[in-house]
Structure formats: C-alpha cells, structure tokens
Image 1 (cartoon, chains in turn yellow, brown, blue):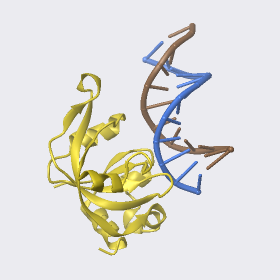
Image 2 (cartoon, rainbow, N blue to C red; image 1 turned 120 degrees about the vertical axis):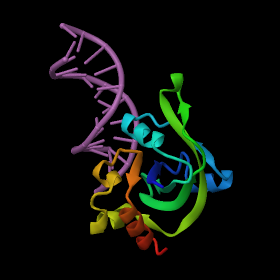
Image 3 (cartoon, chains in turn brown, cyan, yellow; image 1 turned 90 degrees about the horizontal axis):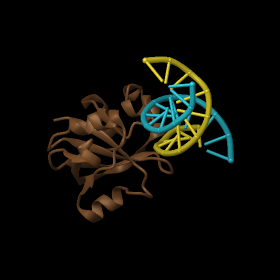
Image 4 (cartoon, rainbow, N blue to C red; image 1 turned 60 degrees about the vertical axis):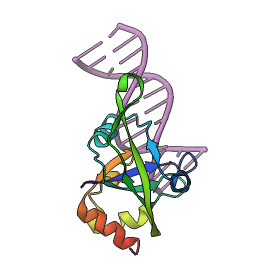
Length: 133
DNA sequence: GCCAACGTTGGC
DNA sequence: GCCAACGTTGGC
C-alpha cells in the first residue's frame, strides 16, 4: 500500500465537502508530475488531505476507493475516486511539518506547487504523530 | 500584495 | 529546438 498527499484549496473543495459527499472523484489534476502519482495509486492506498492557501494544514485521511480513470480530453490525465476515512485529531500545519526533521524530505515541502505527492511510511508516521493520532 | 517556482506558449 | 514572455500556484 502506498501513501499520498492530496492538496486542495478548501474554498474550492475541502475536507468538509468530501465528508458531506461521502467520497468524490479527484480529477482536474493538470500537472504531468502530479498525474504520474495519480496513475500510481491503487485501491486501498491512503492519502492525507491538505488544505492549501488560507489554512496550510493537513486535516484528514482519505482512502483511494477505485482504480485510476482517464480524465480530460483524450484521457490525457488521470482521476481517481477517494473516500474520507477520518479527520486528524488535530490539523498538522505546514509550519509544524517544516519544523520536524523527519519531514524535511517531504515531497510537498520540497516542491510546494505539486498538488499530488507521495508520502513515505516514515513521513506518514511522523505526521500522524504530530496530529496526536 | 508580493514573489519564487514552475509550466506553457509562441516567435524565431 | 531555444528562449523570452506570460500565466498559475501557493507560501510568506
């Protein structure tokens, strides 16, 4: 099982929307590197939902709920269905992640514009620890 | 509001 | 195929 981080602007679509909907099709990714990550997802993988811009914090855990599907014209891009698993006991801010040595290599930190990025097992554990889980 | 990072577009 | 110009994202 792999682990991921999905970035979203909460005013566009956030954790609360995901919970309300019971799941959603995560589409509209229009970045080649991010699309590679989407295509690498398999059902059962887990993903942190991170709110960018105003909040800058990871807020919940979602599960990849289906196989990746073509997205966009000609299926050039990829989308995947996700479902909410649980909110983090407390949000983990970007500042907290940056202040944690174990997370210095986190893909999202190294490349802030990447909207879909991998999270290693060790990084995942460190983030859940910060979340009080 | 500004700026850095990065991607894309279009002229040559 | 190169590169300048421009657009977008997202942190600060």
